[in-house]
Image 1: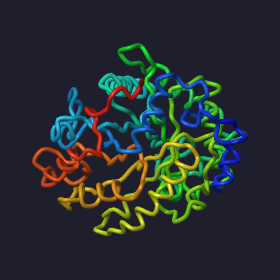
Image 2: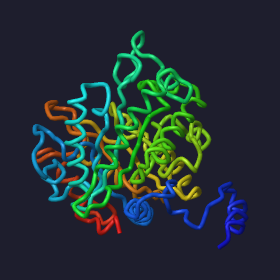
Image 3: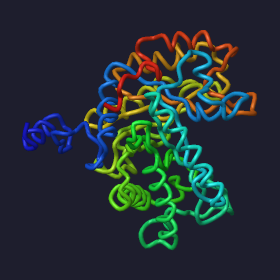
Length: 374
């Protein structure tokens, strides 16, 4: 089909997108073969399934840390999550020795996931590079760093150095087959809130979009990083597609659209599943229209006090609403905290329900994934 015909078809459907014949491909035209294959397979799997993910699943869990080939999810089900979340928070703002140690540990973690056939998604709780306060916004301490990092900003060169460190690391992560490991890179998440220094109140729309575009272009075009899939994920403050896309940089800069949403799914014992479904449909429908991937990039119920949350809340939401989401990721299980966990561990009261969630044909875990890089 010619681009002209596709454009006409899109206009007839009310979708103002010039979709090329390679619509199921990353925005990086030089993406590695494995990255292109992952993109294509995530899109295909999302039509009939969803992959389950867990943040920091194999790095640590409820009461343990650093064990080889362990995750709380595997201890419960026999399989690791299909998607494992990691974080680049330790790549800046600390000593060079600590940064190198973090890079080494994360390199092994991501390569191990790839070698097993699993998928890695990379968050970035980026410590403020121009002030104290860490990645959160702290009144009277934090500076609105976005305007300093974009081209022309006082810290632009410093930002380029930080990105160089990320780029060098990304190009060093290789599997046992010698191939670069594809990763879903999800920077500046929950940007529609105010809790991070890149949040909505701390930069203009134009500044945020410029930061996003520069980040992608510098990694991709200047540093030659070709194993990233770029994910755009606000929190849950939108109610319409227009609001969802308020700080969207454009289809040529994004591979995956997503949403982080704890608030509609039981946080503080408040459930508004109708609102949660509406927002997920906005994400999913836009992805279908624009030829993008979609995901439920973060959710969960801390401590899982609702023992049937997995099947009665999460699974029903995901299965019954014409959604096409490649994965759903719940947040981490803290090592020390007795209450800060989002996936069950052996002995937890929600294990029987989680096993029903695991056994459902709709959900995929690492053992279910077949050649996603081929």
